[in-house]
Amino acid sequence: MRALITGCSTGIGRATAIELTKRGYEVVATARKPETLDDLDVAQRLRLDVDDDASVADCVAEAGPVEVLVNNAGFEVAGPIERVPIDEVKRMFETNVFGALRMIQAVLPSMREQGGGTIVNVSSVAGRAVGPLASTYAASKWALEALSEGLHIEMRHFNIWTYLIEPGVIETNFETSIRRYGVDDTPYDELQRQWDESFDRLGRQSAPGPELVAATIAEAIESDGTRRRWPVGDDAALICGARDSMDDTAFEASMRETLQFHW
Image 1 (cartoon, one colour):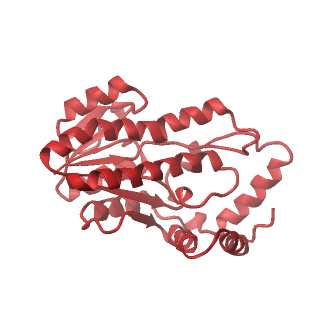
Image 2: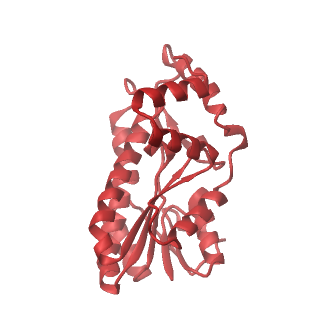
Image 3: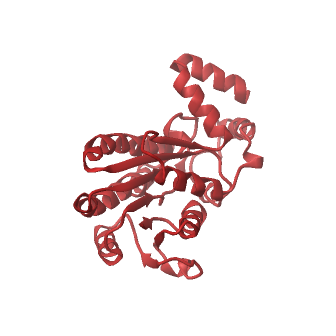
């Protein structure tokens, strides 16, 4: 089985390329800078910029028909809604949402022709519940979740299955590369301080590595299709479970109490 994975230079994408290769998949690993893939032992390594139509078309043509697409490429722009730059938010949506959409549109024709396939979209626990200072990132993940729900309904007829992976805090370089705006000055510097303390209570200091997400992606691909959403990590399981079992008011109250957050 041939699997194309976006964003393989580091973190979850790289771990997924390794995990699927171990399981016998022919992995097509991709990244904007293909030299970052030189040490990956996979079937094929290709340049891919999911923000660019031509790059997507060239990559998919060179990869050939695939049975699995893992949409992993993404980044976060964070900050209070009042101050986050709209142009930066647009750039994030270009990758996190439209990049995934480009890839989906590029592979669906061949998947339909070959009688089936699997699309895995790497979302986030932020795609289920929104905290402060990350609303714009969460919005991109909520959009990805909506696309995935619609895709499931449209493509099940063609034996094409869609899965959402919803990691909580994962030990990668993702957090260190977050582009933060508007939290260095009052009043939001105090909100950032409080939220950092609350976030630590979710287990940020003992977060699992990307290998756990990679294993979950593989498990989803090899599942029977009955489960669409796959939270990853104890924090994600806690938050998603609470989100599913409570109304909005009860959920917010529960999270404030659990996180000892009083803003």
